[in-house]
Image (cartoon, rainbow, N blue to C red; front, side, top):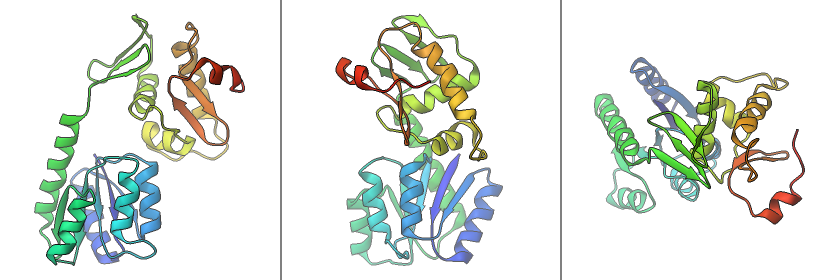
Length: 234
């Protein structure tokens, strides 16, 4: 599972990164509120650990920006123990609240609880137009016809389907599908998109996978007029 820690105290960061990595978590770190906002809104995480007292942008501002786009579970982790701070965090969308000093084992159990709750609530069948993606059965169909996808193509389609309507950058796609950083000149994303598009859209009149120049890719149903105006992507 993947967690984002937004925290500016280096000792706490090192402690959590080491402990959670040993527990099998993939850990990303943001040392200020601006970086935390960027990572939280650009990438997908199972849960976010968010401090309140942060440089550049406090935790409440980060939480507000996140909740405008996503429902990623958030645990507020802070030295503040005043009841008003806890109430404000929960009212603004935090899912849990833990004050410093804290028990690492308790934090881990809370992280797992939130991740399990999210998975239980997540729909296992996603529909976009006449496309149906079965996340459990790992199959996709369009207009009742099954798409013959490789494992990686299905993973790419699943990422796009979960975020249908959102523009995903190449960087976000590589992080979510391959979980590595490719060199800037690598065309692995373009190649994968091209192959997926051939199977997903090639045989059908209505196109679902669109290129947004300079920004990335989006899976969505568009009106016929908008589809005619979109530049053809090769």
